[in-house]
Image (tube, rainbow, N blue to C red; front, side, top):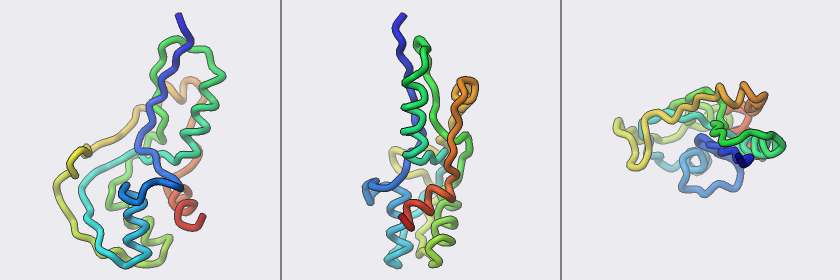
Length: 137
């Protein structure tokens, strides 16, 4: 009977993220003209500002024992992320494609956001906008 809410974020990205993470490594490869190891995969990319928004939003709610996915509800392939970054930066990335999934990853990281929507929360930042923020500050 305690007001405990578990927020489960999906593939959060944004400024200040370590360069060894996928999106920062894509941006770095594009800017520097270095080769990128591109593994198969699909993620529900959620901007850090949306996660912070969800934390504040749900901290004022009274719900006992709820588990809520904080995500966009839209999966995007790793290959598509590369295409978007290339479009923003205006340069092509040298890609070494791997058909397998990278160790520790999954082919599908999609979120069911129905509970978040039911409680009135929805992510606001589309992937293209979030990547633009990361790249152009």
